[in-house]
Image 1 (spheres, rainbow, N blue to C red):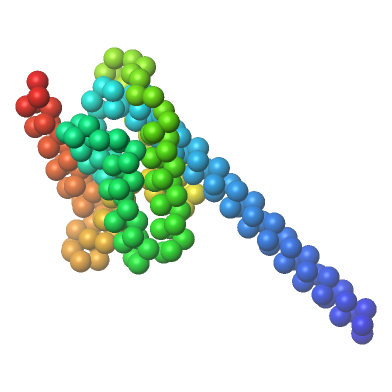
Image 2: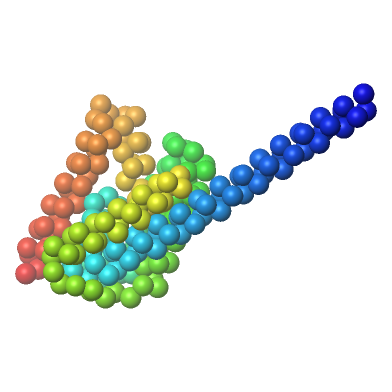
Length: 190
């Protein structure tokens, strides 16, 4: 009987240790994806989009507008603009999502501080293709890790609960407003 109990305890211990090992491995993988995603998104912004006055949607687009108008540090503006939405995600989505999103936004802000503002190319087609692909890959990697680089999704989820619009319609509406303001801003400055 003692031998059987000992075997059961060993089995439970091995299962517990294996579970902790898997969780640690999963956490390390998520951290790698978050860091890689923030770095790739930062490269897209600082080497393609920002120096050539290309805009993005969401909170990143609003931050780019603020950066262009006030010439404040883009990394700091992105972090500050996302903080209220990360706080909202703490209550509407989950604590884990909010923490991971805050971490990914801070990492993006740090990448934007460290990467120089240098235009790799002036060709508008290459800028849009490579900037869009790199930004999409970066956002996708962060989403794969269970977070977001842009708080607009949180705002859409929050608005979804209070209106009859879908998430797609909400994000599209916000982006139309952002791109309209950007268009008027660029037309008035030239």
